Length: 253
Image (cartoon, rainbow, N blue to C red):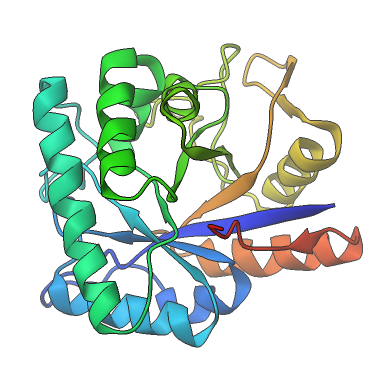
């Protein structure tokens, strides 16, 4: 049994430092690197790419809405065509930086509000999948487990990864509890570890309503922008090792 452990990284910009990338990277197998619109800047992108290479961590693009003030977590009404252009622009930027450092992108995972909107909106999901496919049909598309984004990726011919979350709670329909609700985040590391193991071993997750629902876990996300992210990554790694679950990158062929 194996699982990919990913983290959203490279979310600092200018003089503003966010996250604990250097300490988290030894514990994860995939890095989703901000592409400059919701967070990140060219120097941070390059630094994060080189750090990921150092730890043999798969490099992925993490494009979102052009919303630096809102950290990409505010919904923006955009056409599918505009979302397509948004994806091509940001993924292309990280592609170029990775190439100059001798690295290659492995996957794409939309960020924040765009990620959640594309999980339910077929037209947005299809625009994202089309952009990824046009750039490189071998890229893996990360999306919320069982979502419209996963379906759109599969329909266009991409390899997809059903993503689940260590530090977020779930609703009955498999969606994440909105961050506007007080019970959206899991702050207790033991609770996060138990949720991860349940999703991998039993393919189940307990919702905030107290019910168990089915879920497919190909990759586990730990958000990198919280103070406790390093502890979550360390403890989850220890738990996986104890259960003889291998951490492994989802590599492109």
